[in-house]
Length: 622
Image (tube, rainbow, N blue to C red; front, side):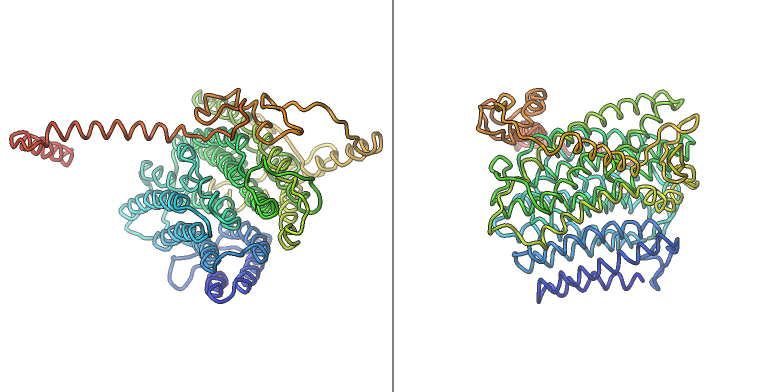
């Protein structure tokens, strides 16, 4: 089966040299076969470990099948979309399929060498995917490659230590140094664009220069591959509580600041890129919380948190796929990437699909994104009751910041859909083969929430493999909700909270029908425009929508024109300003050092060599 999967995703790479449509057709077929096989294996619990003749280089288990299913859904929708969208060179098409193949190899790898080769393959493919797009500058592909190499180097250091500790080149359970483990985890986090790497804006910069199908890979499935890799490490490495707490802290700062940046962005592709960082932060919080809970002896809460990760990664991958495809239609139809320059009315399948995906990414129930967000907040609320004061304080702080970020995310998604969806219908409007996958992604995001009990149930094998205990008890019933249709969060004294996405959807439908019966169709009332402190326009503009947030958090945005001038959104140069300042001071110190010790004075030069020799000697001895 492993050889078949590798062959299926290798064929589109080869076919892209001859025909783009043929390569996408093969990619559609490969995605369909993979999704069907993964779904069958998960539902029948027939996904036991299966190794190739090469030993333990590759393997398949429940964790692999789950992520292959998630990825296959995204690749299927993106390939269908790309048949009409891709008018770039064959090199771009080949790079897209090579990136997909690399992600598949990452998921199948059970040894360090193929994993590292595939991880590097994602970076190199992404570089060519951006650089061969017509009109792309030098910065976006270079920035993407640099951070890809930083990620690969950190992971290489971790695997090198693992090999030195065990003498085996495959994923082997052992007692590893937490420093090495954390270094490798940071390598995976770099791909997510999280704090502090988000301050460089490298992920949004890469998205700005990439074709839309490339953006889907970067935001949806490469993010998925990073989360998968972290979970894979957890299956054979014991991670310390401190490391779990650091993951929670990094995750919540990423979530909050990415939400702020997304709400203030006016770029059609950079705004969803910041949203990716925000969702990655949420998944990181849940992963860290599962580690802390597991080490604190609460295996059921650890299972609940990991189940939340699985729901989140599925919902985010699919809905972010739909949102970027939505962005591609906006770009092609309006000819601009500036939300302020888009005008028209929202209508048709395109608009409906964009709305569904935006609702899921806003964290609204009964969508999959809403279920994942609820599980994250419930986990943090329960952890406040832990006996350890440090864990209680961390959970309280994380929960408060995460809730604030979730609220700001609603602003970002409302703005993106409300202004981005107003594309005028014209002859330039893309074909149904581009709008259909957007609607399908939104519908699947809704289905993930409605069938949340099935998603959590199918992820039981994954959570049990990591925690070593059964997740039984997370699905229950109460009052009018039948047994198994209610998702409960496990508290210290029993059930802490419950939710049933299916019944939430039923209640929403009932209230919607009642509202329509009582009030009829919507009535339009024209009122004077208030533009949040920006010069008045005939109608509200995207920049004004989030201007109140800019004014409130003006110290977070230290550069750019004043919002009252109606100028473009400020750029987030905090990191770059700091880096330039540090570089300038380092340069001055280097020149001063050179003039003091390297100025042709032989005695000073000998003193310098002696000090350097003694320093190296002390380091080696210690």
